[in-house]
Image 1 (tube, rainbow over the protein chains, first blue to last red):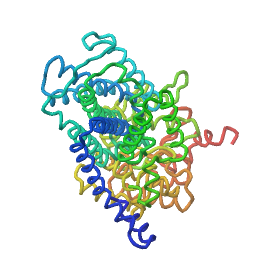
Image 2 (image 1 turned 60 degrees about the horizontal axis):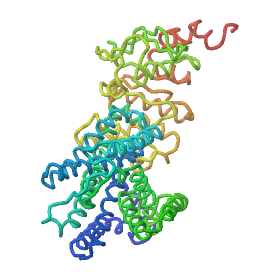
Image 3 (image 1 turned 45 degrees about the horizontal axis):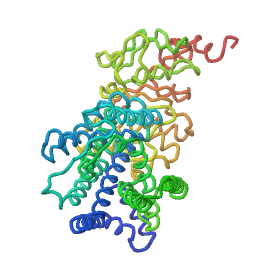
Length: 325
Length: 240
């Protein structure tokens, strides 16, 4: 991109063009890492490992989806609601209507997309703390609504959400693959001109408005794209855990996702993925520690904010002296 | 010269305060029109209403013969009326290139054409060598030029500049005035500007409108304005 000459300056100052070659190696290394994870998902016989891997993949989509809306400057706690809607919609498709698995996944994405469009149309005229609080309330209200609807199983939720049996050995790999595609799709949007408009809105929405771009529409598009990905992940969640209940989709889901993004680093999509992977594994290790788990999580967030302003991603980048983008 | 923008009986109230009251004027195709007046005269409010950031309380705005009263800022901009802000608003964390790109995005669909426009606009505003620089790290004068570049990249028919010269030194002001003259000439852009630098405004404007207490006090060529007793009284007080 246009950092080309910056890189050239940086690398000539370093002697050999280390920065540049390392930056070029980035996509290759990422692809290799993704392939390795995929191979692991295909080959590992251990069910516990398989589950952990799928959990990481889902959390990565949640973190990347949350970060995507952060690009326009909004903290979307509604991520929890759209994840839940995707899960419930897919569960209903599978359990109540016995629809094919791909239809259930798409239905999860579609319901989350439609709901986020309606939600955003009303709420995206607000911004900053106002939007955050409204989206927080939205997630909590949808959670309470599930408990009151008998058709959705009320407080106990929906059980027996199984993917097709033939898919069983492939489910971990399929989950990793689908989540990878969703993350990649959002990243491609981020790197396009649309992504530049997102960043511009985050910088100064009035300037964007004065050059003929309807800011609310662009923010709505951003929210809807993120929610589709999160909705599909929710649909996968229902089929991986086989049981869903309202408590699974509280405000804690997006708050944890925010922790993944902030600890992993919000300047790059892989920071969010890294944060999701690391914290999910740490949470697993702390399982059974009770309240200690949440205390340690909170402490980790505070420590990351204080010590790692751009998360682990930024720290790693500085360590390797990579150019910023 | 035909009228590009017609403002008829425009008023804007904020609660009990009337910021602009019964203001009528037009901006003619190809001219540079200055809007001046003491602090609180309603210049910024007028700008905000014309550009769609505030709705008028009453009155009518038409641009190129079309009624644009009450349209949103982005809709007005797409019709060819683009403004800048006081303090030179820009996209601080983004490169100069991407700042100008945002300005050109809606106006030019073709990528290669857009790239040409970005280059051309950057060079006109003296930013041709700085495309990779982050906007927030530019010196003040360049930041001002960049905020104009964003607007110019959209190639507006009417460019509204809100205090483009404030905070610039005399060399930078001379350069900015030369750039405005070039924008006008090369892109057939009509310019309307608000500024406190009287000498500069007198130099560059074909016509000037003087506002005081939200009303039009005088309108005319720089020479007429300079010699208008009403204007002198508004600026210097009665005893003078």
